[in-house]
Length: 165
Image 1 (cartoon, helix red, strand yellow):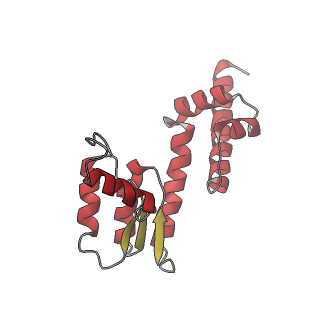
Image 2 (tube, one colour):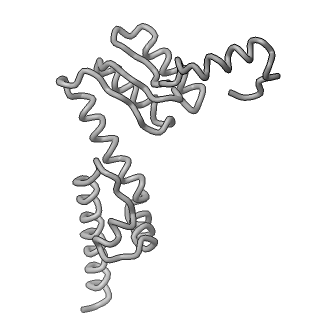
Image 3 (spheres, helix red, strand yellow):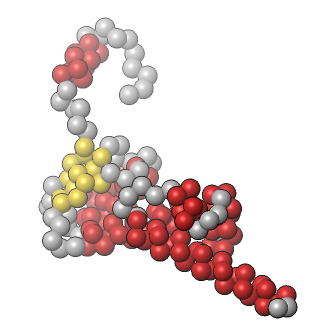
């Protein structure tokens, strides 16, 4: 085997390994999957696998996992047999998820906070302002009596100046 053959075999093995990782992610995206678990599957250390994925694909393990999860979520949102969705993603992903859900005419329960950036919050507001389906934010403690008592104490001036809420 000359150097060219060695490099070709090494590249082929890397691609095969990355294919195994990607297949595993696609088959297990719906449950908690972590880099350590996948590294054991392919007999590599998590650090080496992470480095290999980044150098060979330009994407981290987490990016690959999230891409598959988002792809599957978009497929579910397009399913006409699903009427309503509960969006429980990280808040920096809320805008995209709401826009896809609105496009697919779903009733939406969005976990708080609505967004982490003002521009995203404004875009969500505009997307659902005239929306003919139910849209609500999952702020489940809104009617908790403890919040009511705090509001009354604030209104009475008993707690001082509110700095952050």
